[in-house]
Image 1 (cartoon, rainbow, N blue to C red):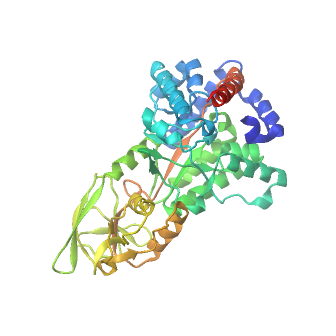
Image 2: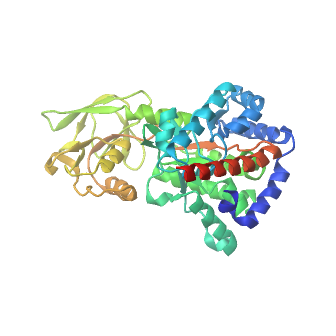
Image 3: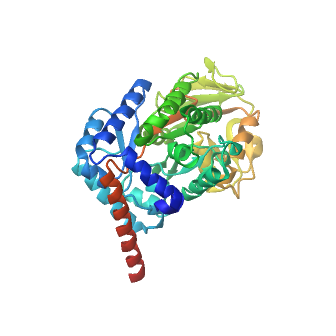
Length: 442
């Protein structure tokens, strides 16, 4: 797997880097983890560290101490293998083995991230069966890298890893959490620390900082999220980038919600239970009743309310009351044709809109009648179409407490010592042989 993701030449470079960053004992890496924790504490945020279960089993004290100090952990597989090629039953066994180790080591876990960010259509049922509340393995890449600044070889390595991660362009669809088999899927943003340092060969911390700041600006402008990936072993090279990205996020108003992966998943589940009750009145108004928690951000666009409403962002206003009158010539919700696809309805509701199916376009301030063949690649265009309309609409915003966008700090741990790295290669090889044998026997 290392050779496939890096190529033979980069694999040798990676081995040399491992020798420099990891020690025979856990002291060197433990110091890096403490540096990471100290930086995030200074920045006022909490990192989420997905860790491979067998590594946790070899170093439970270090991880337990960090958890006791407030650091959040997630499962990074049982061993560090490509789950994208493993059958569902085998994946379930691996995930249950990982859960058993976390419980035996008395380290709570909050969710899952696949090694190599590699999953398949059998991963989500397996995760759901074991009971993971979220997965953060979906890679998306932002258009913040200028090709002309890098060598052809470096650019080729960049494209190689994006393909290996099955990364999707962020411009294709909104970068937001979503639901799959009952779990929340939280996307992870590229380029991360490994891409910038190892693939593109960036050695100037200032240059990495500019790349991550550009992602913060893009996610803020679109109201989306930036899941930062910074492995602990690269805290020295990328600590400045993390500081600058979080620092920039904290300058915005409306704010950026900086949260752990657990908090984001819990919020998305909470938000999914929100609803509106809308009743027409005799005076050209609609009575709106918002059934939601106090943290919900209720937005109104292109309509007058009977209660105070604060200007928010791009023409939207925030209504803090949970019951209010809204002036509107027609129902201030989105009407859709009866043949609209389930994917379209799910997406619109995930965006916080009220959606009603019927064939009476005149009932609605906004009616969408071409969603029969809607796919995920149509999401960005649909968002733009709604934003550009002059329809009177009420909705729940994506994030809590008036936040415009969201960010999370994460860093995978798949080795703590040189021995861990060597054992990882052995474990991967052993598991690959076992999978081939199972495939032949079946």
